[in-house]
Length: 345
Ligand SMILES: NC(=O)c1ccc[n+]([C@@H]2O[C@H](COP(=O)([O-])OP(=O)(O)OC[C@H]3O[C@@H](n4cnc5c(N)ncnc54)[C@H](O)[C@@H]3O)[C@@H](O)[C@H]2O)c1
Image (cartoon, rainbow, N blue to C red; front, side, top):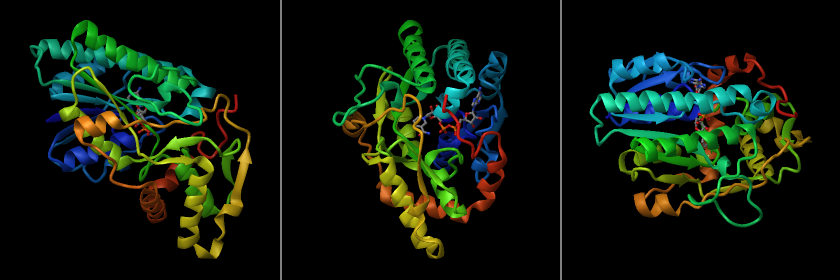
């Protein structure tokens, strides 16, 4: 297949690009290169004959039309988004423009392209979304594909809106779409403003490790390369118009996740042990969802997919990757807002 991946210079998009190229697909990577992007994430495939990069912004409809006409993809995997909840609290405008208006532009560009091509049956528009659209769980229960939407941050509300647009374009115009809603990802190439890399790098530098609130918030952690694998499977085998929840089957409290990372740091940097002495509880994020958990029954039973890594193994690989790849993360620390406390409202 020739796949247009939006957001392919970001964290998850780049994992999709690397895996798709490794599996023999042709890939066009469309990315605006915002603060969260890094072309180093795809450096390993940049010279492959089946790979192309297009710097284009979802807010620029004409640019989207041009990229589709020039490259004529068989499928679109839409990952480009503003993705950091704390930034969405400080500046929701960019989230509305990229995640909602940008998705609308891409849907319209895709629809025009698909119609011009004679509505090929095999065409797919795969919209990649988050479990955060479902809101916050109590002590029990899990999100299924039928859980009502209840987004509570500007980020999750903008993603929920984009999910609704994608479904509407399927119902109204027949655009062949599939959707996925995934839990928290972690792994290599994760931008150093998100929890897991912040913990690793602060531990490494002997700086306070910030934990929001009481650290009791629970997330369902998935290794990014497992997510990329699930996404390619849904693209190829997912039923049209259907959504699939993707989870790691790895629920953990933030504080336990942080302590596990500290234990890896103790093993790898014993001179500075114990790293958990750096843990510092800080004011909670406003509207911080308490618990997310994915019921992965549909993707497991219908498509036969399960994550390959436990969170213990995935964190071991991730911590080692950050310690081995200082050249990747060091320049990113100078980017706007990195290392600052954002989203206190
Ligand atoms: N990170 C997670 O844990 C997680 C979990 C579930 C779903 N998701 C979803 O997966 C997708 C990718 O997330 P991520 O963590 O890789 O994000 P990211 O912030 O690392 O990457 C986003 C990419 O999109 C690009 N982008 C942003 N605005 C753009 C625009 N207007 N036009 C073109 N490109 C633009 C950025 O330059 C960046 O390369 C998002 O849609 C996100 O909502 C993320």
